[in-house]
Length: 310
Image (cartoon, rainbow, N blue to C red; front, side, top):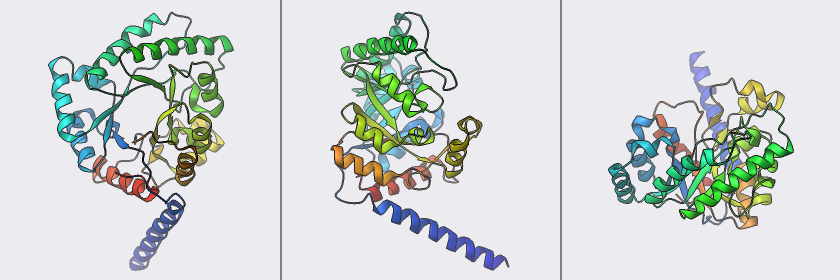
């Protein structure tokens, strides 16, 4: 009986691998020109240096950093980080900034914070600053509140431009932008010159949106995408009640192992000629025995099968 059980498990694994490969074949074709990076969020803070080395060793061209890096590498350490990125040939693609809070307060409350992020990332010769809306999906926001948030985001986006950076809005599960409707409200309230879009295919899928449709609708405003997959159990739960998903520890998984329709997204890339960055951002996932490096290798394999070059 144990031998039969082992045999069936092996057959099941092979079948799952075949289905994943067959599904991804729809996205194959001519290699895509999009540069590909990886987010250090997959590693604990105390393994940041290891994260950079692993990301570079796997052939990724850039990295996304969390906001804590600004203080950890302040002063003379900024140059040391810049030198290390140069040695590894990693581009500082984006820096995650703090949430914006919806309130009737003045935007000046956020200006000093964003200015500090921008000054730091400018020294690293970075490209983008990432912000989320900080709202709650279970609350109704008036048109006036959304307009107020839009004005504040426009001001911050203009500030980012003064530092030679571009600010992007990242719709996130658990915020106003969790749904396609919420995403649209935020983007409609902001000026495309100052606020671009950073779309996360995992968060969009979990919130009930179609990532490929978002790419097609907003490709002129899109600066880069986060790639991650969504656990099938989490998506099934979200379709019934998204509030139940918030209580789960793990929402996401490696590219090609979940429910995201990546071939459709790749086809949207081709149809709209989107050539911006793709950043693998795997958080909220179940760790593998080989740690984040093992997941990174699985993600790289998934990207290659989709036609992305790493």
